[in-house]
Length: 109
Image (tube, rainbow, N blue to C red):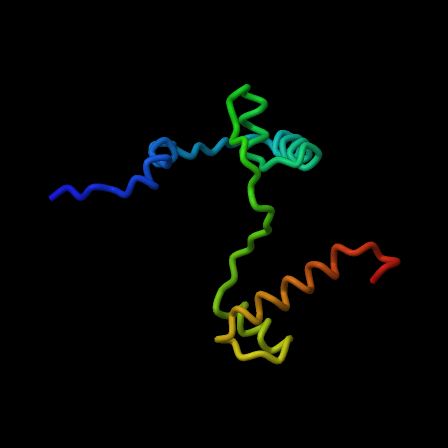
């Protein structure tokens, strides 16, 4: 049985057919790409696409940082912040505040 997909999903057809490719390169190449991406305010993927003269998405991406946290990480953070480990939203909010504090210039901390 084939189900018909919603029309709003039709724009993602190309993305679903895309294949992620990893490149094994020396550290200097990775550093050059990451540095250029940083200076150009791009993701490393978009920077690689620019180097290869391929198109990139024109719509702005939501700026965000990501990290993978284990259950043990949540336990450690919960203890640090005095929050229940199950209250992951509160932990996320405290981590966000800690990152914001980290980013402030030393004179403004």
